[in-house]
Length: 139
Image 1 (cartoon, rainbow, N blue to C red):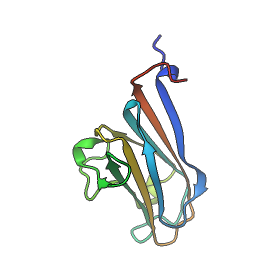
Image 2: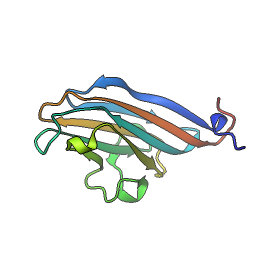
Image 3: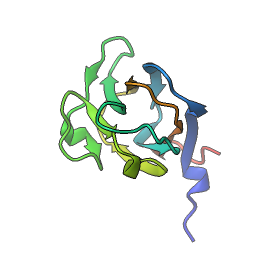
Image 4: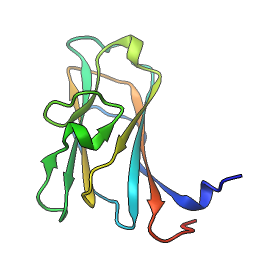
């Protein structure tokens, strides 16, 4: 049996909470790891529609100071990315869902910006899993 436990590190980007404004999660440091996955778990939100929605935008940086939107080729699971948007949740058919996005770019730092448009009240949780450590075990 392969050992995943000692070869990943999970960090909470956003503990379970209702996001009611634009929120920025800076300086997500990937040092010592060669892969990352963002897990975005959306809770129930009956207000989701074309006027009330969340947008998740991912940026990367080599130095933790100068950020640029991620390129489509650097994100897995998002399809084509426009201006760094890796996920838009704008329908009640999209809540109560766990979304997974992989980062395969070569930069050390990530920034995730969650933008609320309209009025929403659904909870969410965001976790980052770092994998492929340069030195293992990590746990």
